[in-house]
Length: 103
Length: 162
Image (cartoon, rainbow over all chains, first blue to last red; front, side, top):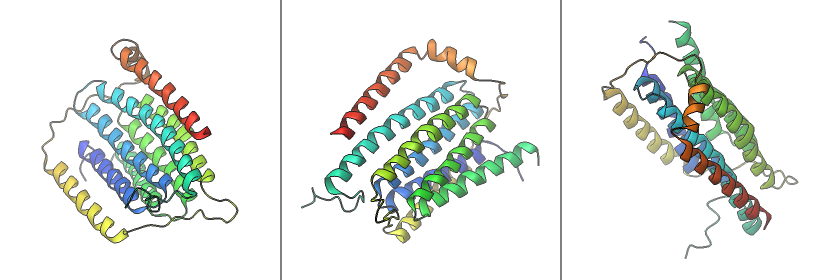
């Protein structure tokens, strides 16, 4: 068993990213799609902080991760407002049923 | 196997297993609760990487803010009376195959890459340095993010009230 290094953290990040993609493309509920996006943002953050530690970038990676968390908070608030409006208009939040624009 | 390795594998297992349940559980409320464990595990990984302040922010913002917002979203968009809280899934098999292929490609790429790593020593506390950086080097970004959060909150409130 090798010592814990950059690859281990990157591998956790890969798994989180792929699970997030899987959640986004398979779940119907719009709130579940949002959860998938949060998983992907977390995997990106793990990458930033892992490279900040092992890549000798000082504190830039941690600052970037902080900004990503702030943007995730803003994104979640806006997205849930949109989801609530969609629910009021269509009385469903299943993303595959909201196809009014489709011909 | 040092204590560091054991803690890493513990947190990695918590993160990956609960993330797997987030995307596979049919009950969306359970998914939200599994997401709590995922965020907790990721915060532990941040601590192992020497980012203690980011870990605390992760717990406060994600668990205290975003997860509650998501739960509100679940509660407000499902008819509570005729319990329709389970959600369907579409095209599981092609999605699983594609995502597994993608994960394999990414893992192969990161294993084959010869990363030039420097193991910097873990600082005792990062909050002091990060605070100074936010007020000096990143002051403009900090102010812009404050304005962005204000705009986002006003926009979300006015959109949701209409």
